[in-house]
Amino acid sequence: MAVVFLVEDDAEIREELSKVLKKYGYECRTSDDYSHMADVILRVKPQLVLLDLNLPVSDGYCICREIRRKSQIPVIVVTSRDTDADELMSMNLGADDFITKPYNTQILLARISAVLKRAYPASPPQVLSCRGLELDYGSGTARSGGRTVELTKNEVKILSLLISSHGRILSRQELMNALWQTDEFIDDNTLTVNVNRLRRKLESIGLKDYLVTKRGRGYLV
Amino acid sequence: MSLRDFLKSRWLSIAVVVLVSAFSAVLLLALKAGPYAAAYVSALFLFGEAAALAVEYLKRRSFYRDLLSSLKRLDKKYLISEMLPEPDFPEGKILCEALRSTAKSMNDEVGKCRRETADYREYVESWVHEIKTPISACRLILENNPGKLSRDLQQDFYRIENYVEQALFYARSGSVEKDYVLRRCTLRDLVSSALKKNAGLLISNGVQIETESLDLAVSADVKWMDFILGQIIINSVKYRRARPTLCFCGSQDGNSAALTVEDNGIGIPQSDLGRVFEKGFTGENGRQTAHSTGLGLYLCKKLCDKMGLGISAASLEGSGTAVSIVFPVSEMYGVVDSPAPANLTKL
Image (cartoon, rainbow over the protein chains, first blue to last red):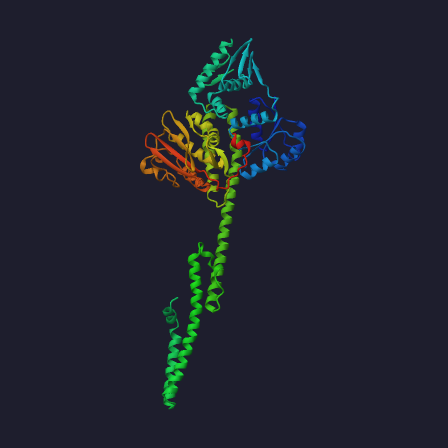
């Protein structure tokens, strides 16, 4: 589980964003010791830092510079300042990405996973497994009990989303929003077709009722 | 200044000299100095006056002629006091002095207004940035507490965000500074970024997206285009009919590339079409739906003008609207050719 360190001075955002990140399978750490923030971060050794720019004591730029002096931890700047100057400054100080508030949560999650993938090319599990099913990203196949079935790009995405929020109902809107963030601007009908095809494929490898439809609420694995 | 006007303005001194010379002639005749002496003395008087007037006239004429012709050539008339040659007669000096102090006081006043506008703009920008923090917090809270209430509120927050964004761009559109960066990108990058930003709105309204030949390279500011396309997308959703679709279509024509955003909504009446980019214009459609500010397309036009892009709208009432943005494909613009940060293009 990737550890994300959240530097944010607004307590409410800190708490709620932690919840969101936890929901999507990240471990979240924070601190409100703004005068020694960089030291705290370096001690915790997270896989990724989400950094706000407007902070008490020293601003995000200083923290970013201090982190970069000693470590290559990926840093995503998350801020409400949105001028080109801010963006340029962040990039010059070695930030890996720049997102402006208020962000679409799906965009934030997509950026986090993109930065993590870039920074740790070998580390993300190429195989995701849950309840007897193995989803192999590399070959785009699902395996269960020795049987294998090939999945399309969209099917892999839908299945991995459902697996990573295992036990929680994902609404159709959430699924579509997540797919849109990967440049698949699919509509409602396409989603239905994709999900039905995916369900049939899973049944063909012996996983009946693996993907459950909750009428009016969404899908569940 | 014509000679006649000049002589007219000097009538008193001319009249005095004429009278004095006539009086001297009469006096000399009365003293029996002879007609020649009388004529000579009065001619001397008149000639002296004429010579003095001529010198005076020529000086003034060259000064005022310079003044008027500089004034005509000047683009910004208030700079005239900087252009004046130093005159060597007292009225000219007074005029110069008056013009200079007027110009200075006006410069001070303009400077004051400019500072105030800049201050206000700065305030709006910082206010917008401040308000984004609580909006983000609310969005996250809603995200963590799913349900009908939160779905409804999310829609409203989406609208709040849009109005906040409008305020920011309104403040930016009015300033003379160039605060955008033109970067090389493809139409696909622009469309894709805008679609992602507005994903929630489009998905919850069941809008079907189509894209067509978007692999054309253009120069634009990605954030500004996000806003512009966002306004067009919001309009399409606002004025939709059943089974809404939105088609993003690229095309190339000689020296320009165009992006057309076409919807199948209620369209715009022919009589309103010419005025949709005017500030505060809401038209027939705006009167029927309550939430129309007449600012969205106005800002789009203003921002496009600033970036040197063309924007136009075409519509058939009852069957849809198409807004086209034209990007001149030219190397003349100050395009930053270095690749944009990954998040801007690869989004």
